[in-house]
Structures are given as C-alpha cells and as structure tokens.
Image (cartoon, rainbow, N blue to C red; front, side):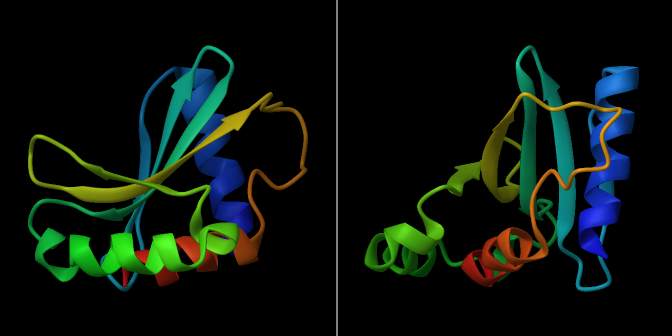
Length: 113
C-alpha cells in the first residue's frame, strides 16, 4: 500500500511543484521532491526523531550490502533531519506504474532502522 501512497505523493509533488510529505505510523517521513527530470524520494526522520538513526551503523550496513542498499544515499540536512534518498528519472504522473516497489521502500526502511 505504500506504493499507492508514493504514487499519490509523486503526482502531487510533480503537478504542484512542491515537496509532498507523509508521516508513517512509525514516525518515518516519506518526502517527494520534484526535479527537472523526475523525482527525489526520501525516507527518514525529521530533526525531532533523527536520533533514531545511527549514521555509523547505517553506513556500515550499506557498505556491507551495496547490491541491496547502494541505490539509497544517506543525507543529513542542515535542520538535523536524516534521510536516505533515491533519484527517480522519467516520472509520468499519468501512469499508474509504481514509482518504487513495496520492496524498494522496505529496503529503505530497513536501512534507516
């Protein structure tokens, strides 16, 4: 069901040229940024919950299994929020094709937890 949520956020971000966001029950934030050639999808924690992320552990987990986690890039924003981000090229807002699969999103969640 996160696939459908991500499609809705992506359409809103693309059509309105805004950052679309949704906070999951776990406190994880899903952000979608429109860019010229597609979208940037972010999953992580705002500054208030960023203490849940242990950057050293995340980087080690990512480096040990780059085939699984390598497409997600860790980012620490100036406000203290921490996300893993992924660029999506060629987004078509008229399509019902998933922006990312449920598995892709679960991998991002696993990486930041």
